[in-house]
Image (cartoon, rainbow, N blue to C red; front, side, top):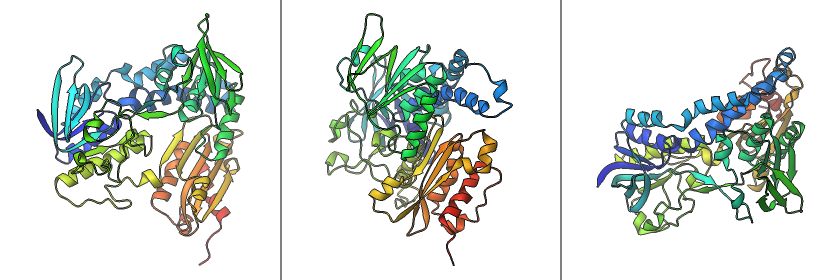
Amino acid sequence: MQTYDVIVIGAGPVGENVADRAQAGGLSVVVVESELVGGECSYWACMPSKAILRPGAARSAAQRVAGAAEAVTGELDVEAVLKRRDSFVHDWDDSSQVEWLDGIGVDFLRGHGRITGPRRVSVTAPDGAVTELEANQAVVVSTGSAAVLPDIPGLADVEPWTSREATGASTIPRRLAVLGGGVVGSEMATAYLSFGTEVTLISRTSLLGRMEPFVSDAVVASLREGGATVMLGRSLAHAERNEAGEVVLTLDDDSVVVADEVLVAIGRRPRTEDLGLETVGLKPGSWLEVDETLRVQSGGHPLLDGGWLYATGDVNHRALLTHQGKYQARAAGDVIVARAKSDTVHSGEWGMHAATADHKAVTQVTFTDPEVASVGITAAEAEEAGLNHRVLDYDLASVAGSSLHADGYAGHVRAIVDEDRQVIVGMTLVGQDVGEMLQSATIAIVGEVPMERLWHAVPAYPTISEFWLRLLETYGRPQA
């Protein structure tokens, strides 16, 4: 039995950040990982997906500026794109990440970690060797999520792609069908369309349906303009591969889509099915409900007494985004240290040990063309919450900086204002490069900056950020 203050199961960016904060606070830490240190984001999600999306976005940006457009006349060099992708994932070699853990003084065990009781974890290495661990303070589950594969007749038999195969492909199919209109489906449709693939995107609902309605309109229009077939309000009824090796998809309206590969991107599930949760009174395969300090809720089960179990990142289902998971990880690592030292725990709203932004200021950039950037709540969410609010809309093309940024720039911004407090509580932007403008809105929301004070935050001219002034003019200056 090896004893540490903190045991972290899962060495993605979230688990790494928990370990870093706990170790920096003076606690001994061991991290357990069965796959690659760096996790989903580093090797199969954030980094490779953005690496394959960026060349197409750069080409499109150049083609929208006269003078540069004439210089950019060829197609993407897909081989070069994939080679660049491989450099970001280090050819799926995690040795540098393992060295980083060692450099900060965190021990590492490669193997499958399984909870065996309160504060105890058993780790089975690839060679079958078993190491028993015990935590003085906390066990942190940071095992993330995996793609959902629905139980649709024939689907499993066609060996569908998930996000992992889509971001890690070494050859590009001539035809790709995409099931699902969320972030993964929309981004991968964008990427493969830029490669010259014939893309068919099938979604039961509008694209990016949890966002403002104008987002779907803009992304659908762009995909169709680029040559993609976008089928909304449809779902898959049956799948099979024919004798030629093609994937034949029969939809619920009896229409048929034929492709070389099919990407399933309809949702995520928690990676908790073989974690030993049943040994401490929790249900295997379930999302882990946590409090504001990321401590798993016990439901009165005595084996969880003492609050020793934490869950950070996707696995707690609060905000399935790497940056939000890392935010949770910093709060969790710090609060574990505080509790270990009997220091004051600041768990109130916006306290240093609370993940308040998971409720009030979740940020997200979707790297479609056009980009989508959002923070806080939508108009529909404000309405559902019964918030006394006002919706401010503005056409980004009307800002002087937009016309300089790209010929024929098209975009839109919407802000949601809490009228009782006169502060912004949500903002959504769609347009070229809007992701780089999101942080200003995030700061305004987290800082609860009054509309009156925002008049003094003068946007530089001529930049697209001048939309802030136009939104304020639309709102009207409060009278003293």
